[in-house]
Amino acid sequence: MAFTWATTPVLDEATAADLGLATGFPDQSAAEAWFSEHWTELDDAGIEAVTLLEAGTVVYGPMSLSA
Image 1 (cartoon, rainbow, N blue to C red):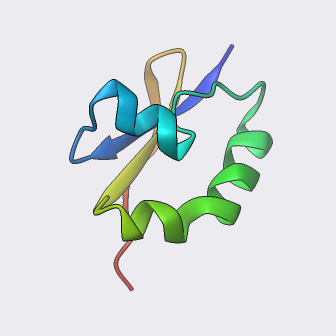
Image 2 (cartoon, rainbow, N blue to C red):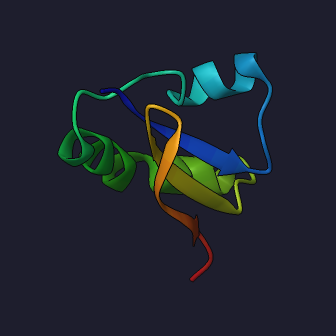
């Protein structure tokens, strides 16, 4: 199953791809490792929260990017 990140607010496809959000991850650990490396870029892009999905089903979230 592929893991993906959904954002609040929802981004258009081009912006999501530019930020690396169009990528599917093979497992939860890979998705979380990617997030830990890129969360500041998401925050800078105006993302308020993220939700981790596995094949479209919520694993957890929304998780706020605010400190």
